[in-house]
Structures are given as structure tokens and as C-alpha cells.
Image (cartoon, rainbow, N blue to C red; front, side, top):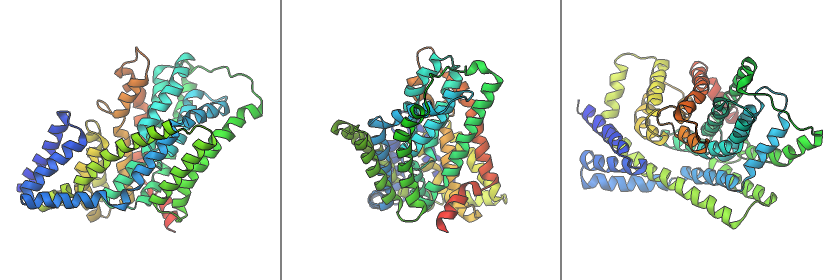
Length: 438
């Protein structure tokens, strides 16, 4: 049972370093270096780590990650997204919980443009929350839709994390990017339905607001100027994938060019803003690629020590069903999401979950969407959900973490329901990629 010892000290060592406050990238590379030296044969193990790191970072499949991040940063730094939110607010009228509904619509649209959950949540919080509180919205009704729709960026292309999942798990990246669209739209529709229903049941949480009288052209002109063209940008990215005329890397490059074109067209593009977008892109990309440099060696250590095969045999000994194993994976991912970040969740579980899923015949796209959805939920689960702290950062004084937890809880229930639907009906995640393959 040596594999149990190896698995325990590697996962335990990683957890200990993270608890000590070491950044994820450094914690992961440290554990991997020690494991390579001890398990793979001293200096030969370290040389193997160096070879694997070179191959991983030089992998052309990783190219969409910095490109998708850059695309979102350009749109965020130029302020185009803020103009789109204002345009959507003019169009949505006579709906219970109107501003909360606008938040969901705006968050979903910006998610399809940025791919960044943090940027999406911060933008929505700074744009929508002051107005909602000023008009008498209950803080939970103001904050809940911001966090819930901000996290949707994990699922909708351009999602850099979807590219990372596909690369690590050996799943078709273009298929996985497309597979997240239907679950994301189901989430957005469910959020709107909940907001309207709750506002009808208790109008005090979202008081009706008096809109200034506007002509039809005044209401729709900003939408046609700022929202419709940005929707075309999403069509460039997802359409090129669906039609099979571009690889994920090419579609990401097209998205960057379209974002630059949009910034220039709206006269919002400056050298200073481009510089900020590039700096933020480099920061995020280096962190992801640094972790990728150790991922292949980490998997090899678990495989060489017998930990992967040993764990799979132990699970097979109880004769599990594929659905039962998938539910077990979801439970583990949800528990991990309460305490560690999304990339760490991937690093710890992919070397075990992917071979096990392949052996039991679990569809790889379903597994990929399960990963994305559970990681999205992990962004919002107490005590360490990242978006909870982003929300606290943009919320006004007097709003504590208890109110933030209360605000996000109903939306977490909705996300869990969509996750259960995916397990019950895998076509939710496989239907759209199937069209692309056809």
C-alpha cells in the first residue's frame, strides 16, 4: 500500500503549503520537485521535470489562454462593457426586480466577452450595486445576481479555464468551449426566473423604480450602438468554432482583433489602456503556465508510484456505476472548492479522475463541463470562495460576510440544480458540440 503513502504526502504537502499562504504556483512546483526527486530517481527525476515543463509550456494548445485573457482585458480596460450595461438598462423595462434582471443580462453578455469571473464580478459590482442600493433594493437582492452572473464567465467562451481543463484532461478544447454555452444560458434563465418570482412574492426586496419617459429611439439606440456590435464579437469567437473554420487558437486571435477593432471604433483605445491590458494578461498567463509546467510531472509521479492505479482498483472493487462515480467526483470537487482555488482543484484531481472516467466510459465532455460548473460553484462557496471576497471589496461599508453568504445561497441552489440536470441529462453538455462535429 505504498501508493497510499505517496498520495497522502503529496496531497497533504500541497495542502500544508497552501495553508501557509504560499502562492498556488510555488506550492505546486515545490511538491512536484520533491516528488520527482524521491519517486522518479533523484537527478533523473528533476531532468524529467525540466523536459516536461518545456513541452507543456511550448504546447500550442495553450496559446488560447493568453489570447482569451487579453481579449477580455481590452474590453474591460477600455470601459466598453460599462457602456453596454447602461444600454441594457434602458431596454429592460416593466419587469419585477428590473435592475437585478439587468445585472444578469449584462453579466452574461460580458462573460461572453471577457472570460474572467473576477473582472466580470468587479465590473458589475461597481456599475450596478450603488444604483440598486440607492433605489431601495435589499442588499441580498443586489449582491446575489452580481456574484452569480459574474461566475458564469467560467462556462461561456472565451473561458481561459476551459482551455486549461481541456489541456490537462485531454479533452477537445473547441468541444469543451462550446459545451459550456447551454448550461450557462440555463443558469442565466434560471436566475432571471428566480429574481422575478421573488420580487413578485416580496416587492420590498426590489422596489419598482420610476423610469424617465423615453422615446423608442432613445431606448434602443444605445443598445444598437454598444450591445449589438459586441454580440457580433461573441459570434466571431463561437461561430468560428461551431462552423469548424477556426481552431481555438485562431478564434481567440480573431476575438483579440475584434476587441481591438471595437475599442478603436468607440474611440476608447489608448496606448495606456493597451499597456494595462497587456500587463494584466501577462500576470494571469504566467501563473497558469507556471502551474502547467509541473502538471505532467505531477501526473507521472502518481502513476509511477502506483497511486493512480491503486486508487482506481480500490474504487472498482466496490463495483460502482458511472453515475455513482460521477456524483462522487462532484462531491469531492464541491468540498475542495470550499477551501482551495480552482487551479489547485484541477491539479489534485485530474490525474485520478480522468483515467477513472475513461475506464468507466464517462463522456469526456460531460466530465469537462462538470469540472467547469463545480469550479464555478467553488468561486461562491464559503468560507474561501474568491468572488465572495471580490464582492466584499466592492460592497459599501456596513455590509458583512454574513449578508454576502445569504445573498449567494439561493443562486448556489440553482447552480446545483443545473449540475444535477447535467448528470441526469448529459445531452445538456454534449448536444451543441455534437452539432459542431456533424
